[in-house]
Length: 332
Ligand SMILES: C[S@@+](CC[C@H](N)C(=O)[O-])C[C@H]1O[C@@H](n2cnc3c(N)ncnc32)[C@H](O)[C@@H]1O
Image 1 (cartoon, rainbow, N blue to C red):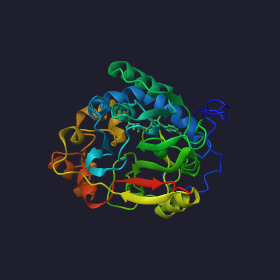
Image 2 (image 1 turned 180 degrees about the horizontal axis):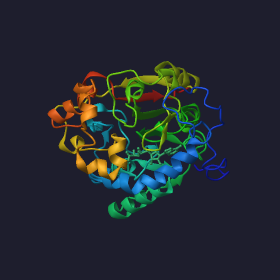
Image 3 (image 1 turned 90 degrees about the vertical axis):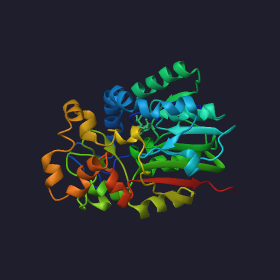
Image 4 (image 1 turned 45 degrees about the vertical axis):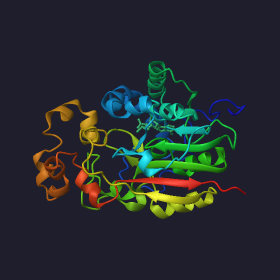
């Protein structure tokens, strides 16, 4: 299945052809531009990988041992959403597999999984998990923008807040479509464009004001040093169509009620809290006076705190915090 040209002949950090940030106007800083984002993200994921796995391990590791995967910010079980459907006997590529928890779960359910990730440090966590579970599968270090597999290699390509949040969609979506077999499924989750335009300066949690340019989401310099990428809804749909994919569904999951305890304490998407040791543990930073009393009070921590949950929980009951796309490559 691997291209004879070897892994990512364009170079892992090759990234997208730069367009100089044609869509700038979002949360873009001077250092972030299309063309350097892959290098930036690889370096940053290598730096934060251990901490990310330490913080998220308790929630996401479980599924590697049970085979029950859960989607997204609110960890809604696949058994409820039925995004992937049957995986037994299917060739599955996970784009941005991180510590390999999802692919391990799918291997447990009979899939022939392959994990692809940009970060060598993240992949080292996948290898450790394989040793712990005894369930190994091929791991490939590459960018989702230049996938080192021949066309029509997989039945399913998927990611849960994986590579499609950090790679240039203009390259990653056509690549996913290329390596899918006719009739194959592309399914992935990412933070919603609506969430992105309300993220408050210096934080990764949403507010109630439209702060950032909807048309400037392609390249977003996040508070945690990563560069994320997103598109307006219409641009996503045109990109899917131009890549030969049919939209079967766009799921917009809301937090379950009650939110599971593990999710309530999940600090992943409060970027400042996750990557600033002091903020994580003193509580004050997450629910600090300014945030609570600056007029966005209802959805800025106070509500999450009041309900015993995360400070984006109340927000996500009113607006879509994430998208899960279900796309089909038609049988010609
Ligand atoms: C938020 S993590 C998600 C991983 C896993 N689903 C989880 O929740 O732990 C995103 C992953 O995407 C990877 N990634 C970022 N940019 C990528 C790219 N261009 N190609 C492949 N993987 C990429 C990162 O290294 C990271 O492991």
